[in-house]
Length: 384
Image (cartoon, rainbow, N blue to C red; front, side):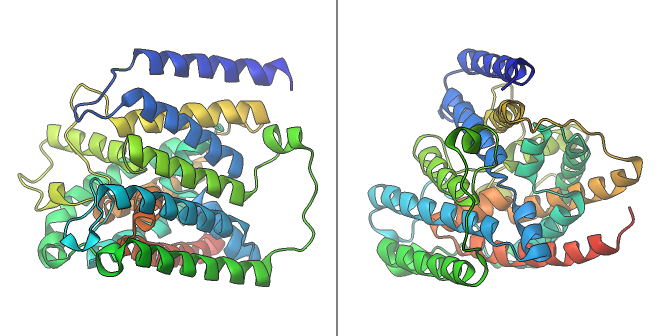
């Protein structure tokens, strides 16, 4: 490992440590900010080293029927589901009481969720990543992600403008559907693990190669990408720890809050966003001066992915071609609009949602994959 790789990584870690040290101890809601940033840093390393990107994983399947990325997602969901169940058994021992678990991403199942998930999947295909992956890929030097994230900010603003119409159309009648509320904690966990195991078993039996490559430990950790299942296990563990100490994983609350604050300051928002602030998910707010736990978590992802990419030799700064800018921006708009109306993205709705037993997580997954599949076919025909 050369000094040219190591020095920038150490510098990034030093700046990261300074941020952690000087952060306020807690945010406005009493949640620990330094811990949130530390978890974000670890999450960024895991995303970068294991290539835990929902679009990359989907594209590998569409292109080559490579199931390894999906196995990583299934591993994350299994570990997180077990961890969340252990937590919720202590926090909410009677799931039949009609109460939902605190801060959990149990969203309403509605047409808005379906449309948002589909748009998000299409946006992943056009922009080349989901929102969390755009953040970690920015740490690898993929500066085209800046264009996509700017588009996502615009998409959030469009989402706020369309929210009231969607809510009055059907959203007001939609209800959160929580599996433990029907089946109990044990029953819901058993059903979810059975589904995850069935999917994993089929993929392993049908598509996984039988002769894995042997790699030296040092090379495997610092130079080669980690196997997707390793990344999945670590993501599930991080999600469980985050829920106990800080809150469910999510990456769009800060981006949405910046968009909401900007739109409000410009007088673009409706006076009232019907029902929005009472729904569970990646909540957006008008930003105050105190840092938010989601904001420092996202900043941690960027620092962690940059340090990891420098050490591994994955730092490859690249500017997008001018012809790619419209596609990146349009894809970002779809990501932002989809995340706003679905109340989260692949991290907040799929990971945090399914782990807690939310039906909304499964619905989002199905229609997000549909949008990604259609988007992948569109990308094969696009020249821009």
